[in-house]
Length: 278
Image (cartoon, rainbow, N blue to C red; front, top):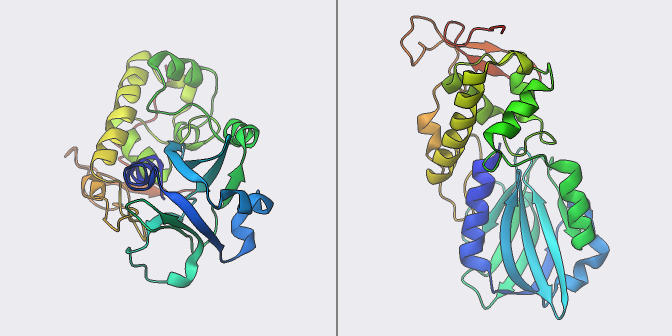
């Protein structure tokens, strides 16, 4: 948390409000929040924001100055947020980086991250290409059914682990993996290469359906997540299994949702999501 939908919501809000603004100053609260490129910070002063996009769970901000282009890659990690200046946080001391802007709708972009699992990177084009290639597999919103078939058939990895592996598929985390697999009626521990053809087709459709619906509803505000403007995501109201262990299965099959504890907790219905072999 945040995952793909939350990062996409943040990128869209930033794109609407800061593209065209000029950077008047950069404030760094702690140097270790910048993973790489801190020595290039001066270049970003007086540069202009020209684009904001999402890659995986990261938000990429593009800057232009004279004839050069550089990038800020913001990893949101488990607790990272990009916020506008009027958005109130419980613990403002965890704001570790601020871009001061002029000539746009918003006067600031703030990077808030209490647990600091995410970092910022200041990159040139070669650095961004390397950043992308080593971190991200295909985007699940762009992945074709054929790509998913080939991916699943090539490995015996557990299905949920595969969906969450960022170098394999970029952007899906624990919340949405649980929700996707429940709707697809697939067990989290199902071997990927044992998923049948019809089930893969169903899974491909549901991945896109769940992620797009979550984006439309502003993401899932779980724990401390909210969008740059402070609004909470409403997709948490659509969660069917995440954090619902012990509750009746929403499919009314008579079973209750179980939780298995591993690296990330899995929530599933033991009756609707049985492990199958083909």
